[in-house]
Length: 127
Image 1 (cartoon, rainbow, N blue to C red):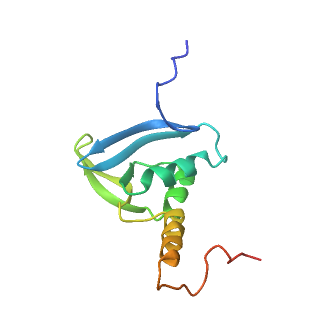
Image 2: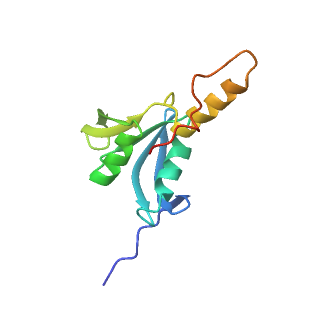
């Protein structure tokens, strides 16, 4: 007889899991993308991490590890009292800005009187 699926919190559109806040840092020990490859997870991640220290402990998925690495998370070792040992934790401090936030800041600076920019980030295209 099959067990019922684990109840998960809805974290965002197409994203379910758990978030635990500890001392102002947010741990995401379990996360599931309902539609892998749709971009819903990365959209949620970029929005959720802005201005927060976010940590993903015990990541076993190479796909998730790659996503976190591309978003400037670093793999650190942290002692886990629950497991009484050190575990790998992908971490991004609150002071890291998303690319979108950097573009917004560049736009704000460009609009300030007496400032100029050497290049507009919106006009640089590949190809």
